[in-house]
Image 1: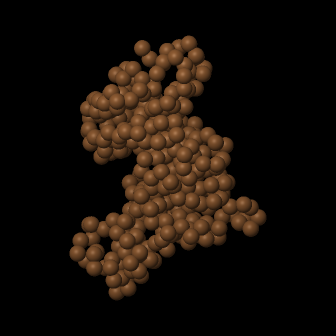
Image 2 (image 1 turned 90 degrees about the vertical axis):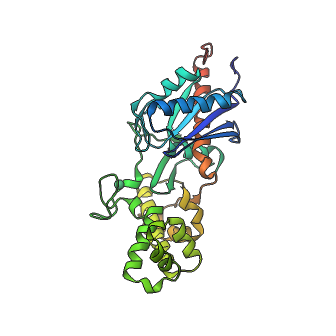
Length: 334
Ligand SMILES: [Zn+2]
């Protein structure tokens, strides 16, 4: 891959608390090859595993750079992991360590930012200029695109939209605060709301009450959405409550940021027919001066779980090309 030509293939890695997924991605965002492995629990073993995984892919493809999507705080230099709640790194210069082992440029990116970049380049956010992405799963991951660029804040932390407090003294959150938006608008919130509603009026529910009676611990957001699909009255109320919180939160974010497009991603977005139209109505009803402004379009993501990986690979490609443009004679590796 030497000689100043454009890089055609890069590796994008989605680094979750449970699994590592590494893919070879081309310049059109197509995934060509994938290797997966369980995520090791120590920093050393994790770096060994990442190096092994990339080497395996390098054995089959000519790779120019590596991008890592990390669920955690990544420094603004995109080389250091400050803190990641499910990974064994703290203030760790991960990019340099991997570059030393692999002889390839490595960049890190917050996973929501990586997903945003993939959706912007190849998916639902294409053509947007100021875009908000909310990835709704167990919590809310969020990313902002401002004038076609990822907005990373001053210290690489922005934006933690899921932890905006929407209910003073509300449900406790793992972050230590109470009443965070994601405690009302996430897959976990679907379960909590369902259990609260079942406790007050179990007779209204046909499907959910039976399942909760059997094993409340097995309840998931997906099951609640499934019960709503089957017409369970309580589950339908739960989805309506979720839609209200989604619309309200997005109105908050739009009052601050005035986006032209909002992309709803994450596991819960696959149930969008159950809540998205409702959420749009709550959004329009909650935003300031709705009659006198253009409202953002609200769409679902297109790239699914692969978005973080594809975005990381694409950001690695962009970083490498920028580096080559800036210093055309400097070799990227030895
Ligand atoms: Zn919180």
